[in-house]
Image 1 (cartoon, rainbow, N blue to C red):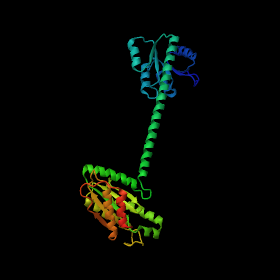
Image 2 (cartoon, one colour):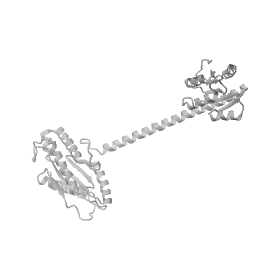
Image 3 (tube, rainbow, N blue to C red):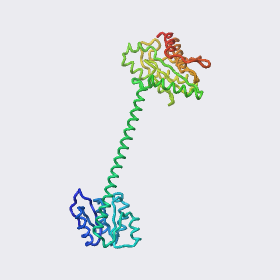
Amino acid sequence: MDNQQTNPNRSNVLIVDDVSDNVGLLRRMLSRRRFNIQSASNGETALALAESTLPDLILLDVCMPHMDGYEVCEKLKTNPATKDIPIIFISALDELPDKLKAFQLGGVDYITKPFNSTEVAARVELHLSLRRLQQQLEQQNERLRQEVRDRCAAETALQLANQELQRLAHLDGLTQVANRRGFDNCLAYEWRRLARDQQPLALILCDVDCFKPFNDAYGHQAGDECLRQIAGAIAMATKRPGDLVARYGGEEFVVILPNTPTEGALKVAKDIQLAIADLKIPHQGSLVNPFVTISIGVAVITPLADVSSIHLLTAADRALYRAKAEGRDRVVLEESIFKGSMPFHNESTILGQVREARNE
């Protein structure tokens, strides 16, 4: 092996030939063209040099002892690190099968000996130019792939951020259950879906008993913690993924139970009542119990397409009013909601009438 110091601004050419005169001639010719030249006199050295320095082009003799040029080419092309290096065969073999074999193994050109120096230089220049274009194309493609990856990552991050914003927009910040917006959207969706499927929809409306005296006695921070615990207990009592627990407002919570008949809704309501009792949150200002309790109104209906969901909500509110009027800390079912189709009504008007009657 006889190598010269390389210039990083020049193309690197590796000459592989066991005849030193051929190497010297090619070296002198290519050095005048301002190439960095390396040489190897056998296949083993050529493979080691190619992998360590990654030349821009290889001039490869075919007839060499121990390992001929065909075998060297085959090994270079099966190595991921060297498979893209262009190889020009230079050989005294001038038969068509020899040339075909060279191209089949991955050679880009074939020059027969004795060679013309001008022709060799021209072919070397051509294939180095093609190699540079190939590298530029690969770099451009990699930049494009990176841009696509970056854009996909940005789009994914944006999608996740939007999903998180949507989640937060439908989440009550204090209790971490759904907020009123989340409840309204879920109720509208389930009403339409169950009206189409003609399946029952249950609604449970809960109100913490004597919550104002609780805040007066223990402070608003304790009141907030009380609401958080109650929300968690209600969520634990509703087992199915399709059920929704929401903070309806203040100390009121609401549960949507799709595909749930009356018996199932009453069982969930009783489970909620027991879960709150198990919390054993002290309440010295309660008129009902030394611990925090809730009143619960339950309503169940099979939705109709031409009827507003407000009728179900109003029925649950009436049941809750009765639960509080009958002494609190109890579950009441509103059994008479409507018979047949009813027109749409304004939610605030209907609920306002019920809440005026409740007079809380």
